[in-house]
Image (cartoon, rainbow, N blue to C red):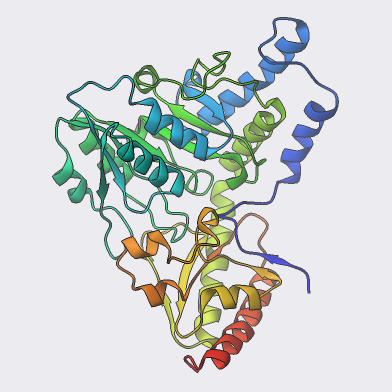
Length: 386
């Protein structure tokens, strides 16, 4: 049976149109984009084109795009980069309980080094941040509020615009990990009032190893670099630019803007078909996260009485996930599900399905069949729900 890939939130397949745009840069065009000779200027022009394409996708100014190795680096740059310019009176950072590990771990490091006071914004049982919870924690000593737009494990959406308005009113900077929402739902920084946003190319059918931090002008002035060297990328990210990757990211941004609405309408229908098919044939299924505020491509389901890791192995050749790829292999339950108040046993029985641009109806039919067999097998071995 051909493989069925339902793990787009971990990484998406490279769109052939993106690869086509990258190949000439990899094989025919060369030079350092920082060099002043014609080869360097040609590379710099490609980077500037991609910068413009990405800025248009997320609603920021051309000068606000800093290319990175991905959202993880961008998240680190935000949380660490704001510390040097912070005023002594603003020494608190608020981070939601369901952020990506690159935010949570960086915040934990900052706290351990006593560089700032880090506080966790709780989430509801539905998995989203209640703006009132943010409002209760805000004061004139808050430097930064970091709340993701869409969670990678549950697909649950946050009301970033309302949170940003509250945080801005208190004088804090607003950072949003937009990795999962970009290319799937509209995301405009200027309309939402977000100061800084992080994203990765491989989440939007672009290349891996490249992403960006996008920001408004005032936020850019508030940041200091965390990687030092030649002062590339507006002085905030040293290192020769990955021109081929950046070109690929730019092309992926163009395609995301053009195809997002039709892609997600089709993918949303397939996701609903997947859920209906699983429910019809497998008893004991529960959804994790509020289904009324969720990405159109994502499902997080508990299969009562079936260990998720065992199901994930047994369902091959269908690719699904037990949660964030960056936390794979741990023996602790998902921090995201735990923060939502989901019990340990339930978290260990939960799986994520994430669809995307190249998912087909045939893939969904195969996935349903394989899930039925896998869950029945695992339950039979453990004496779980029949």
